[in-house]
Amino acid sequence: MSTASSKLAIDGGTPAVTQPLPPMFPGGMRIGAEEEASVVEVLRSKRLFRYYGPNPGESKVALFEQAFAKLMGVPYSAALSSGTASLMCGLAGLGVGPGDEVIVPAYTWIATASAVVAMGAVPIIAEVDESLTLDPLDVERKISPYTRAIAVVHMRGGPSRMAELQAIAQKHNLKILEDVAQAAGASYQGKRLGTIGDAGAFSLQFNKIITSGEGGVVITSDQKVYDRVLMYNDVVGGTRNNIPTEEILPGINFRMGELAGAVALVQLQRLDDLLTTMRQNKRTLTASMADVARQKGFTFRDIPDVEGDAAISLIFFAPTAAQADTVKKALNAEGVGTSVLYYPERSDYHIYRHWAPILNKRTWSERGGPWRTHGREVEYAPDMCPRSLDLLGRAVQIDVSPELSGSQIEEVAEALNKVLGSL
Ligand SMILES: Cc1ncc(COP(=O)(O)O)c(C=O)c1O
Image 1 (tube, helix red, strand yellow):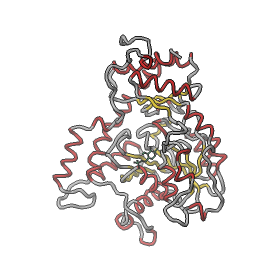
Image 2: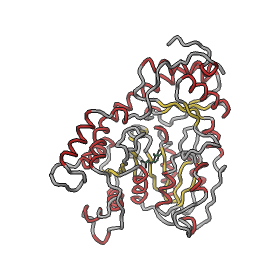
Image 3: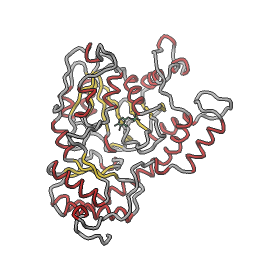
Image 4: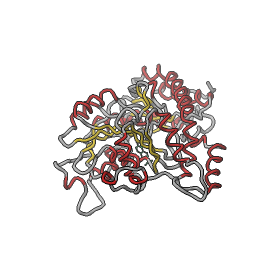
């Protein structure tokens, strides 16, 4: 432990953290000579497009897809331009379209819901529970005759309650699309996330666990789903992949370019090491604050499979939203970047309550979007998921960077003990 005084920094004491902590770009901060060499190789070959160029050679995107599928343990993977594109391709793969409803969690990046709207379907918002992922009981309540799929989002690295959600999907004959944008490489009961549902959608945007700046991947074990993804993500994906002419559907382009593929291929090799380090760091931090948290009435986020957690984030619930805010401010003063996941007045597209374009059913056509022609009236309201808002308003969040040094972890632990102990 450092020698920072026990007087809180917010009250004029010495901050527990002596040097700025590393920013939370897990794969991004590891970009190095290997990524550089891989990109330079592509540039020198002048083959920037997956399918052709002036010089022959292997496609980085194709190599990345193969390596990604192998690491995840599935036969099929398609590399794409973004996580949102991956969600759209996943939904297209599962046959979701106009007339359908897809259940999405109240806590997810708005892209999960936007992708549903973009496919012409209607998002139905369900509560999250103490796992900050879908509450299976509310999912079951939200099922209607129009429900086609559940978008299960593994938020902030933590696996969702897959056993219960799978049972519900099976009972009601629904598809599961896993949104693994924030949890690449994490697992549930020994299976990598994204391989449990009918399809898994990943993001490689810059603040994800591994990154190509922008990018995404869809994986599946179902060849029919894969064929549909190939047709949707590439205008000529049908003919390019020898799909019989009479089965070809109209697609659009969401292909990944070779430069992104060159980076993604190297980043993938870094994934398991990043996870190991973040898990170790999170275990240390969690253990260091467990006693004081219990004494002060704080509880940890309930992770359905702790072993499988990607461990990017340490989240605990304060007894009240006011206390969460006090802790956040005091930790920030100590030098530990801390957030509270929901404030009513602060716009944040991770919280359904702030999804104004969705809640107000705004669409690109003045004649209205999927809701206009849908088989039933679907209404949204800002307070429709009160439990989620309560939990998120009390949720204190700290990034668990893989770049934290041993002494930085000690300083963060000291800050946590100092701040919670002072309450
Ligand atoms: C849960 C979740 N889903 C989907 C996305 C969309 O990914 P992208 O930004 O790559 O389109 C993100 C990240 O931005 C996300 O966090």
